[in-house]
Length: 265
Figure 1: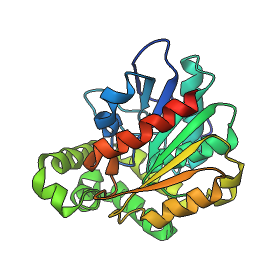
Figure 2 (figure 1 turned 90 degrees about the horizontal axis):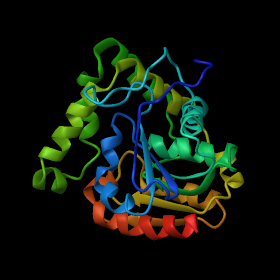
Figure 3 (figure 1 turned 30 degrees about the vertical axis):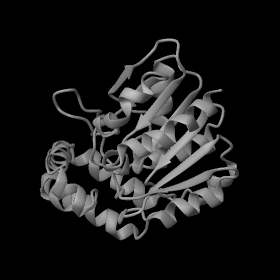
Figure 4 (figure 1 turned 90 degrees about the vertical axis):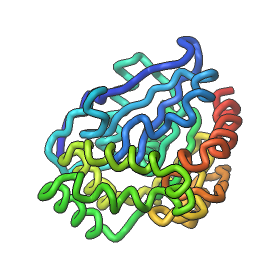
C-alpha cells in the first residue's frame, strides 16, 4: 500500500464564491461521469471533480497510480490532500459507487470537512472479496480493455442501451482507457472495505439514491446505508441501473439539488 497521498488530477468550475461541492466518480469512469448534473449544480456550487488513482481521460490527464493494493482510507486521504491544495476547509460531497464509498469514509473520519453528503448507487460493504481480487488480477494480466464491455453492460438498463447506444459505448472506451494498476488497486480497496461500523458516526445531512434496476449495488445496499446514518433519506430511482445519474439524469439532479442547497445553508 502507498503511504503518501497521491496528487489527484481535478477540475474546478463554477462561481468562485459559491460553496464547494466535491464530485467523486464511479470505478472505471472519469469525472465526465457527473457531466449530466454539471450544468445545474455549477450554477449554485463551486464544483471540484477529481479522478481516482489511475483514472481520467488520457487527453485531460490521469491521476498517478502507485502500486496497489489501495484502501478506501487512502483514496479518501487523497481527496483531503486535494482539498488542502485548493485551500478548501469544508465542502459538500457527492459520490457514485466508489466515489460514494470515499465520501462515507470522509464523512465518518473527517466530519469537520464534510458539510453534506450525497451517495448514489453505492455500498458500505460489497462482498465477495474474491470477486474483486480476481478482477484486479485479471486487469493486471490482460488490461482494462479486456473487461470493459462486460462491466459497462451492467451499468445501464437494456432499454437505455437500446435508446442511446452511444452513451454506453463512450463509457466502454473510458473504462478501457483507465490505467490498469489504478483500476486494480481500487478493486482491492473495495475488496477490503467494510464501512458499516462507521455509518453511525456520520452526522452530515445525507441523501442516499439507489437505482431500481442496479445489479451492481441493488437498492437494499442503499437501505443499509440509510439505516446506519441517522436522519438520512433513501430514494429509489425508477429506470436506473448502476449509473443512475446518467440514465435518469433529470430525476437524480432534481433530488440532489435541493438536498445540497439545504445542506449548504
